Length: 179
Image (cartoon, rainbow, N blue to C red; front, side, top):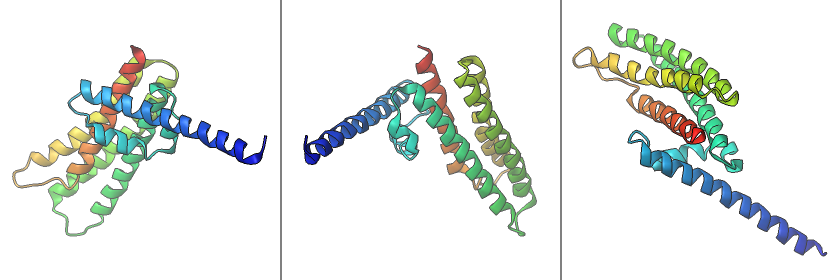
């Protein structure tokens, strides 16, 4: 065989693998969004395709790992943002207190997500669901405490919403694997 024919065959095979991975992601996100009003299809696809491992996913079980890893990374990013916000010396004491609580919540969330990933890999789906749900609650708890004082606006609303949705995606994918 000449080298251009070999190159063409390799390119075609890589193209097929790429299309299949995109289909797995798109199909899985579509099913998750259909079954859960907390999940937006476009968010699911765009967020997860940012993880290089999504490109090689051959099934929804691979996407569970991608979703959890993405949520762990997101939790860490939110923790960094909170640290930056806390460095503002003029921060209102109530907001500072809320941010400190959120910092702890997101630290715990990252730990819970790691446990969830290990549980999923061990096919302990009950534990995976439980600890990922606990991580997911961190975003709601963080957001809700800002609402407890009239006139206070959370500086983390967008981040809390994204984190909540990432965890909803992980849970939806785990449920698909269990079916």
